[in-house]
Length: 157
Image 1: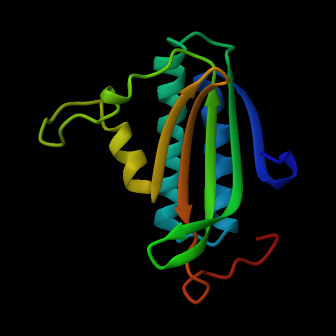
Image 2: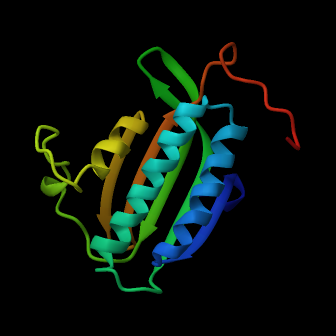
């Protein structure tokens, strides 16, 4: 991965207090890329949920462990050809997750917790989790709005 291609690269400690900074950065980035407000909020919530899961599950809530957040614009393949997309990669070096357990609880169960994976999956067009010697990687891809529907954002506003 070419470091020059990243729009945003953050090295974070596994500390829940840093999540507010990440939420602000992701919200601003998605706004600048022209996503509608609802999709900006959904993407921000997805990244927040993913980071909270890394802190809680991969690092067992142990503070100070490394997490890397990488965001770039890519050319994604859709059923209709290629489209521009935002790729968000989260990398950690904690305990890997059993992929069979990567399913949110049933939405019919009314109780707190366990909906983070649903939020993540609903917010993105593509999600892939991999675990290898270099660490755990969660790749999220969201297609950019088509140019005719993308809002125009003036710089500096």
